[in-house]
Length: 90
Image 1 (cartoon, rainbow, N blue to C red):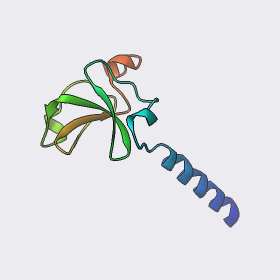
Image 2: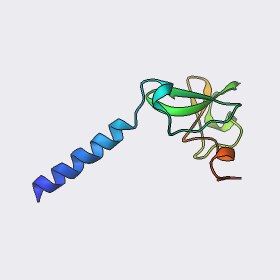
Image 3: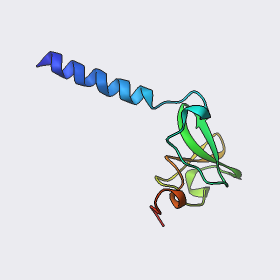
Image 4: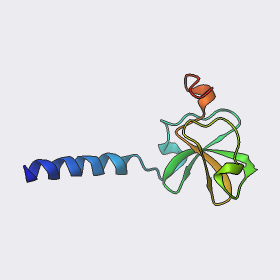
């Protein structure tokens, strides 16, 4: 039973670490519209809004699948923009 738990834990760790990026080219699973730039920010794939600066996530605006994040003064949307992913969040 302990061996099974260890195998499951290692499998989960492998999946989580495989979702991290080292450059925007690793982010083929994230869809950004023309107004946003696909980027790898702190090892996470995101759509960045070059036209918005922020001091907190509440200052970021626009449609974002799981909410905006303010990282290093820039607005970033993880997992893609809602307008191009089946209308989610419209």
